Amino acid sequence: MQVYTTDTPTPQSGRIKVGIADYAVSSDQSTLTTSGLGSCIGVALYDPATGVSGLAHAMLPEIEPGGEPAKFADSSIELLLSEMQAAGADTDRIVAKIAGGSTMFEFTSASGDGSIGERNVETTRETLSRFEIDIVAEDVGGSHGRSLELDAQTGDLRVRSAKTGNHVL
Figure 1 (spheres, helix red, strand yellow):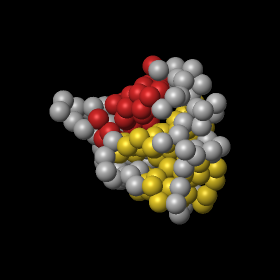
Figure 2: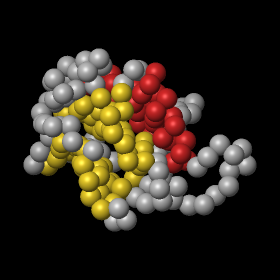
Figure 3: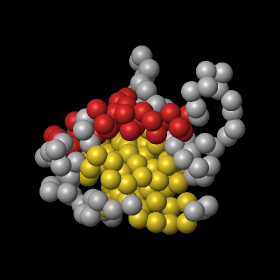
């Protein structure tokens, strides 16, 4: 069973592609993938008991009035958790792995509240903490892009980057 927010994610030979400002949930051991994470944040959630997994690719930290929920770190996490529960996951068992949140360009914010990437990471941590979801691994910050693959069978999150190589969280 696969649950999608849009028509964008499509299963292809056990792979589900998650676009920018999108998310997907799987309970059939598919591999969820996303690419193009610069300042965006990738949030991978996994329930090891049921194998239900979810992956979000959020662009901005906090939802704005009238905004598309999958575009924002805080509301995309809420969507993921809701869809995962509907697919049989238990929030007491769900763990998180996060990646992205780079500072891709040097801009000085007038408010001094950090880059979009830094704010995406901070909001993601705060939102997961609010739902009492532990972050068990992360690869955040820096100045490089990333691509992710979440193995729904194992919960492994493969992070690929031209600058830092490939590794598994």
